Amino acid sequence: MEAEKIKFKKHIILVLVIVFLLTTSSFGNLSLGAESNLQVHIIDVGQGDSIYLSLPNGENMLVDGGPGTTATQLITYLQNRGVNTINYVVATHPHEDHIGGLDNVISTFTIGKVYMPAVTYTTQAYTNLINAISSKGLTSIKTFKGVVILNTTTNAKNLSIMMLSPISATYSDINNYSPFIRVVYGTTEFLLTGDAGTIVETEVKNSGQTMYADVLKVAHHGSNTATDVTFLNDVNPSSAAISVGSGNTDGHPTVATLDKLKAKNINIFRTDLQGSVVYTTNGTGYLVNVVPWFVGMIIPTSGPIITAAPTSTPTPTATVSPKPTPKPAIHVKSVKLNKTSLSILKGKTFKLIPTINPSNSSNKKVTWKSSNVKIASVSSTGTVKGIKKGIAYIMVVTVDGKKSAKCKVVVK
Ligand SMILES: [Zn+2]
Image 1 (cartoon, rainbow, N blue to C red):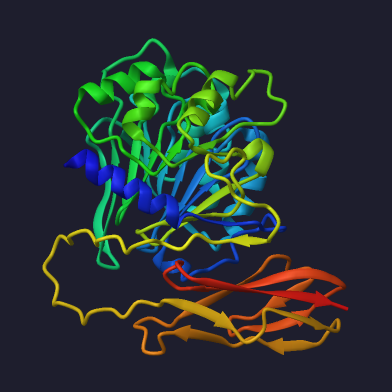
Image 2 (cartoon, protein in one colour):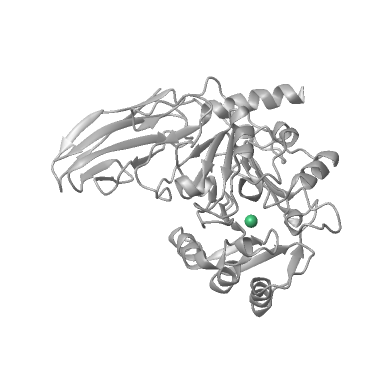
């Protein structure tokens, strides 16, 4: 029964995956009602890890801060997304490529809770981090299996962030202190793994905790020390993100790890090849800002935007508290634009008008996105403006992220 549900869910989520072939690396503008969505940013910090979560309850979380060399870029990245307060900071383990930038982050932002493993280290990076935490008057919470960072209901969906590990009191390899963090929003799950190795994979499995996730942050930059086939079968992700620096001297990610992911037709995203990888989920499916580096399913590359329509509507998960029964939703069947292509002069504007079918759909809200804002911009109400000569694509997406239409814009 459980296996069947998981298989069904994976199928639904696979078909819900919408890949935007964006020519700009900036995905932060794509709002899709961003405030009610969960975004998971696997930030490109070179060889290291830093994962920013913009939570649908309005809070922010940061798992690792990358190496010291990219701290300034990381801080700018977060500030550009309007981050002032980071409610939850997790230092997965004391290696420099994970905590080197965290002291700066902690000094710069208002910080809520800090989570760290119960292990000390004798490096400058570690000392700097400890000093940054104490100079803010904070103390850290120890990471351990069962630690609940968040468990709440938002937008009538469950939002929970929980640690599945560390399980042992001590580990000989400091990487293994990295907590497995499972993030659940509605029916969409992420599993973050830091640099934990196969020992932890086995421990978590033996503890009987649910590991299934739609998106796996591959452990230890894709090294051979983790991502066992058994573990991959248990997590059964449709997408895997590898945070790794180009030209790193550790040989990450390894061919063996990539082959294991490919063998399961998992879409792979890599920060070394693609920059920051951003997942956006409304709790029933997710979008990724870049094209998979390896795709298990065939995605044609001739058009700028590929959307896969869901074959059926996923059943909503039960909410914790009983709510009055809402009126049955009338689902959007399609969205069309008054133009599928247009040409405008530089500096001129054109208003695109979406038509939503059926016209009595429950939620007719849409969001707009340009494939290249340097060529053509689009306002939140669909007004296109020619910026400079070239071709861009304007896309309209229904607020649930399920239906979209596009218009080719030639700026002359
Ligand atoms: Zn690392």
